[in-house]
Length: 253
Image 1: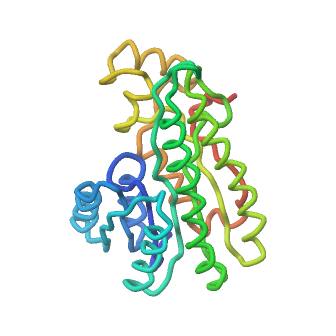
Image 2: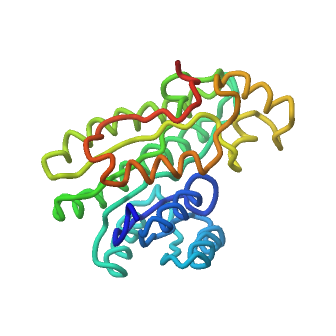
Image 3: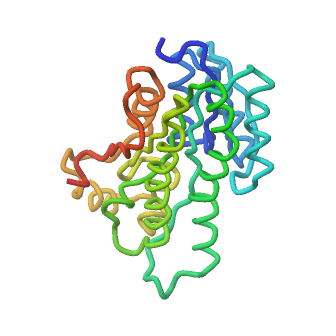
């Protein structure tokens, strides 16, 4: 098992990419702190992990709060004495709107969760990893950082910020034996997808429109990103740091 004995924290792990990644890492031997602002979602993910024989802990936390990020790291250390992987996955979407129509509060919320939440995770996780002289800090970015779709300017800006943050943190952490990598998914079958499409539910018109932009002819499944996260967190990716890995079926070509 590629992550045997390691301890992982995954934010936004109550559903979608985070839940799939938590399950995948547990199957590879990691003990997982499952973090979500939705406590019921976090507990549901833990139940899935325990059903397949894994070890996990559910934690309710708001990644925009410094105290919550500190608490997450402390709970991982209290439970298992180490922290090998921190996957800053929690994020919020943006419904497509022209910039003049976007409420300032929406911009602030997107930046708080998608950027500040990642930065705060690094603020508390990286010192532990530096002291251990090993660890991997993963970030969920987006193809919106590289090839944005119209009308999601705040979301695209937030993901562009974390791609640059990835590079900066990687340089800071490298001399301590710690890697930092971001993952850029194309549209993924998660609860966020209808919002990105500007719809209440995903319909065939919206799906077909998005699929037409992906050369491989389908959208991501959460498991596509989970497999990528496992690889990047493992020693198989020992020379990968500061990179944004596009998992996009060719969308950014």
